[in-house]
Image (tube, rainbow, N blue to C red):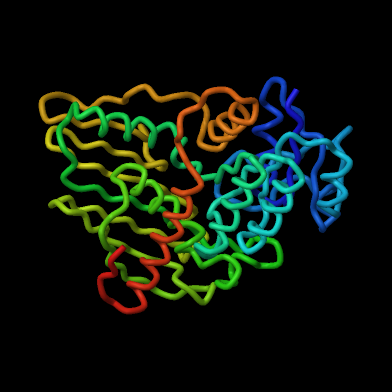
Length: 338
């Protein structure tokens, strides 16, 4: 039995809880949050994923408001750090130094230096550190990478990624709306697609971005072109300044020499391959979603099972580095080399 704890019982903490509870031979034995009201009000905590607001049952689970005491008493194998971004480094390092493996939500940190300290702690303690870039595990994105990597439809000519949301006013003490704590939409939301661009194509040689300020006081809507040493045209757009009635959308279009791969979470069908010599079709994808699949991957790694290197801490730092370069480009209104 793998004994798991969670620190931070907001939207993502509750999502992690549901995923762990659905797994065999995994037990959530402890949860930590300084806001004890969350242990009673276990329903909706905001978020942009439907079906994530059902009440939770914390029977026989240790409930704590102090991580040190939880780590001492709970004998954890692993901890999900689902706290606001500005707290990631402190609590991830504290857990690893206590001998606990860590799944830390994305983004890894607000800056590269904090991420490097987290990696150093992982290396010094020998404890696993995985960052929750769930899009690398999202079934349609996994299949898109598989199709691109196979070369079946030729080379990529262009790709566009979008992630657009209503303003996330639900965060604890409004931390998402404080750019010093969240990094604004660019680092909190748009990084999903920046990371997937890196995952699919490698790090670009440069970026060129334009952004507009929003309710966080930072880059809350950003559009970036990723520059590579060929003629590929790769762009991503993300932001959380959409109206409440808009809700949330994530999508991509990947143009290859012999097909276009299309995904849009608001359409039906959501995922299609449109080849140049036949009808569009809906390819089979793995079951689950990005959250459940990344957590399954983490648990297997904690147990010592052989798992592929889908996301490494170094790549997580590169994604922070990438978004920070985008923010710099937007501020300077010029291309920034990486």
